[in-house]
Image (cartoon, rainbow, N blue to C red; front, side, top):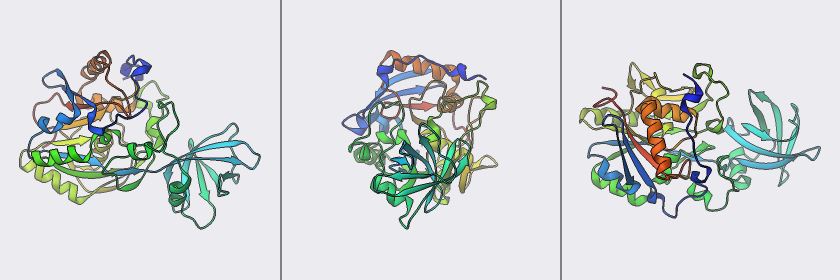
Length: 348
């Protein structure tokens, strides 16, 4: 398949530039590939669209304020986007700078802290923070929230709360698991009252999630690496959900990537480590039966993942409908609830 097979026309004014006043006030497109139906709903209606005994799986990663600003010894300005914290004082990062620094070069931050360039790792730079202060502590002190590149404004104080899920607890991401941004305390309570269970994985979303595909053939694309943890408690929750006839519903593509990366003989198993899994049509998703997800970029790997789940033609039709109905797109936009084309569960 080709990247261009996943193109759709998106008016720029549909790209959400800010969150709504209330998290759960967004819209929800219910896309049932088995029934070939599209239904316009409110996200707050999600509890009535699920059943008692279903299991929602959330990504509990917490976004770091991973954008820093500094200058080289020569005086040139440097914008730093941490991709991943790899140690107490080290990280991989993208650097926005007119002339790339050499190995051993220094980047001086606003408070005088120094990042030393250790070398390259593919498209990223390996950085070391000099001094005793841990890197995560420095980010919390100096960093800014790393809003996606399609949000054409600087992050402000409100983004520190709104570009973070209400259940975020394990720091390490540099991009939010955006399907989770629609959930607030009242909606989570309504789901509990409905009898819907909840569980968590951790997948630290990297900045690579926004990188465009450079190869036209899908088979030539190499995915970025992300760290994840699927714990034994969630594995048991999934087993119990299957046993009682409930459905496992992923909240976000990051949950799908985590669960599919943990499969052993077709079953979700405890796993902690890195994944580079690339899911596109032809791949059979076996770990989940439903998916809550935001609308994704044209020709993106995330659009390819949801197309693997619900079918490419059906997904492109759903996106055309969303454009016609003026849904809000991307991180601060509206959401979809996807059911796959096969009747019943994807996995047994």
